[in-house]
Image 1 (tube, rainbow, N blue to C red):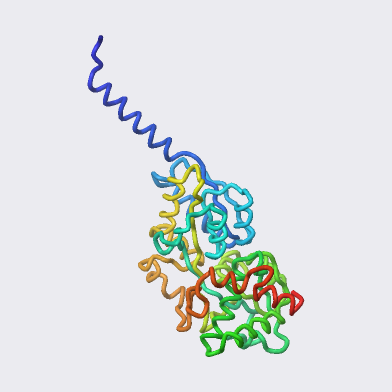
Image 2: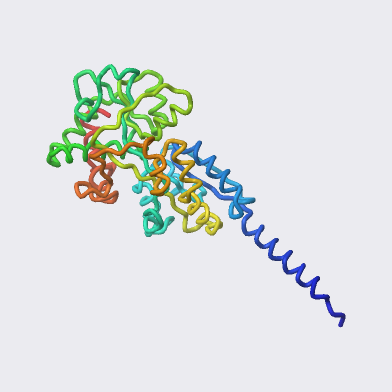
Length: 328
């Protein structure tokens, strides 16, 4: 039997390893996300595709209202990765058996980026809107998305409620404030992006929105002004892999990349607050802190599971009652 030279064996082995590496990296990922980060996710995907891990990996992307997107995935929309606007929407997929219940035990508690609730106002702020009490003054018209389709709307509701709690109000008083606030709401669009478009088209005096959404509008050439209230909610934006993903290895590598310095810098350049503390420090002047910032895990809320049961159950939740009361 003829002997194969060692050099040929080594060359064949190296070629096989290179082929295996490229085969592992190639393929496609399906990203299902909420509406606002479409631009920045496109940039992050391009940056990852320029790395060895992302080389040869293509993406299918779907963007829309966060809760609607989560429901679509639960109903069968193909997804490897979800980037949603609330942990509540990820929990919907946990309950459907599609996402691991420990998704929030990953780095940065499963969060890829942050933002805060802000008030977008008309040029010059003619209604002098600075704090939550200004939103319920006579004649003030408010735009916010629908809390039964939009994740940003849920953040707005919880921010309105918990701001009152941090101002010393009781649970009953804070809940009454939310109902009074919704009596001033003149439009409830399906998503945060659609609500922004409604506001920019001229409806309402103030838009409850993400800081990232306001900055995205500015980047698109819209002259939009906003106020960060002293008491505001830190919006934590979760990213997770689907348990049944056929490309789970690549999906997990991409998720890790979103939390690395390159992607965190892209988030910061495009209106989002980085979760990486080193990158966050670099952009501290762009994203001012607020003394009254709180999170969904505040003891007056108790996390997304408690908030969903109390506020967003479509039959018995407080928001269903409030919507009926105000004719929403």
